[in-house]
Length: 305
Image: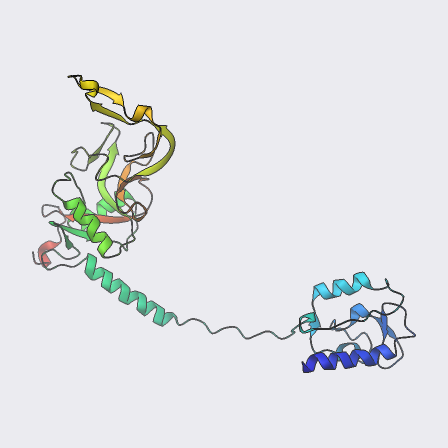
């Protein structure tokens, strides 16, 4: 409030001597010259005695200066100007905030890593770098991001292979889903399935066919309209015939790999609740390795069973 009063008083003193100046001008405190209103508080000593600058301790914004330039000379008598706290912009800048404490942040991340490491890469009944999930020893290398082929090579280097789930009846895939959700994992993982152009089919790494659909594959929306065909004996006919269900209703969801797609490698992804989906083999994800004792580069000699 003190600044507002001092500015008003200074302007009042200047306006009393302004009668001899043209419209849009104001007389300096020395009385020997007139300057444009737009020159007030612009940082320049236009009056030579600094009276055009001493009336304020801050500089007007460009918007205010443009306003005075546009209105100067439009009135026959000087316009009464009301200055407020927002009329001026501070000439001083605030000191920069102190830098964040990166040491504490890094230590917190290290503690989180250690907890996740124990959940995913350590178990007394499995070799080093593996943990127990269902009846499998799995290595969830969540901190590594590589393509599918590199993930397979990395699994081999630690005594394993990309995980395979050839049978839904053994409960191993259900155990994986339950485990990933329990430890609040958000990383996407490569698994040991891919589309082979030789057979034009999805197979596991041992060439066993992959079951497509439930309970493995994610349900995804598609712009294509697809009808769902079922094998059954409608109308009491003894023979099995193919027919379109629900009077050929149009469906925009699929629970299977995308057709005519270039995504030819299988992964379990967070966005699909860790159900399988076909992904670009060159995109980066983490390896989900299953321990295989017969692997050539087995590293289990130093780890207890």
